[in-house]
Image (cartoon, rainbow, N blue to C red; front, side, top):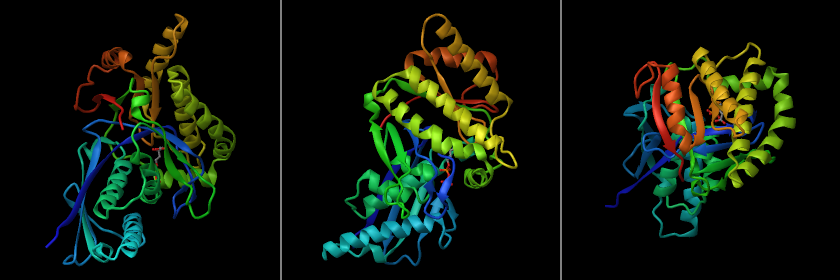
Length: 352
Ligand code: DP6
C-alpha cells in the first residue's frame, strides 16, 4: 500500500509596504499592493505535513498539536478545496495518477517560534499548508500560482511562498486571478540586509488584522488617499531601491509606510492603537541613530517597521546590527534573549 505524505515549510515575512484593507473579503483581494522581506531564520518558520489516505473520513488539521476546526466555507476549507481542485486537473490529464483528490487529508502544522510571541503566524502557516499540499499532490504549479491560494488563507501568506524581496500585486480582476505574489529580487541579490525582531509584548493583540482593516476600509478617509496616491508611487520607488541596493531609500520608504499604516489605524473610527510606549521609544532611538549618521554626512543606518502589534522589526545592513542591538539593550536593560517583557530574537539573515 502506498503512503501519500509530504512536508513543506515556509518562513515569516515582514512587510515594508503594508497591506491594510480588502476590496473583496471573501477572495481576500487587497485595496493596495504590498511588498515584504521574507525572513530566513530557522526559528521563524511553519512546517506542515499533509497526508492523504482513503481510510480518512474527513479533512482534519492540527496546529502545534491541537486540533483546529475546519469550518465549512472558512479559510482553511477554501485552501484545501482549491488545492484538491488543482489535483483533479493533474488526475484528469493522467489517468494513472492515484485519485488523491477524492481522499480526505490530515494536516499537521507546527511553528518553531512561540505562537504567543506576538508574531503573525498566519502568513507562514498558510504558505506552508499550501506548499505541503502542492508537494503531496505533485502539482506543476509555480510559487505565484500557489500564492493565489495561500492568499485566500491569509492575505500576507501569499508573500511567504517566495524568499527574499516579494511584491503582492493587488491585481484588478474581480475573480482575483491576478492578485498574486511575485519575486522582486532573491535574497542573494541583497543578502546584506538583516532583520532584528524586538518582541515588545507577547500579549494577544486587541484588534485582529482582519477586523481592524475592515473597519479602516469602512471609516478612514486617509486610507483613500493612501491607496490611490501614496502606495503606487512607493511600490515603484522601493522596488527601484531594492534593485539598486540603496539602503537609504529602502529605509526611508519602509519607515514612512509603517508610519502611514499606523496613521490610518488612528484615522479609523473608533481608532486602533497597535504601538505602545516601548514601540515609540524604539522609533525615537532609531530616528536619533539615523539623525547622527546623516549629520555626519552618512546615510540612514536602520529602518523600523511595525505590524498590527507593538513589536518592532528593525531592518539594517549587517554591519550596523551589533551597534543597534547594543543601543537597544542600553535603553532597555531588561532586554535579553527570550526573556519577558522584551525579547530579542537576534539578527536574522534574509534568504530564499
Ligand atoms: C499589518 O494577512 O494577517 O501585517 O488577510 O485578514 O488574514 P488577513 O490579514 P493579514 O494582515 C497583515 C497585515 C499587516 C501588513 C502586512 O503584512 O502587509
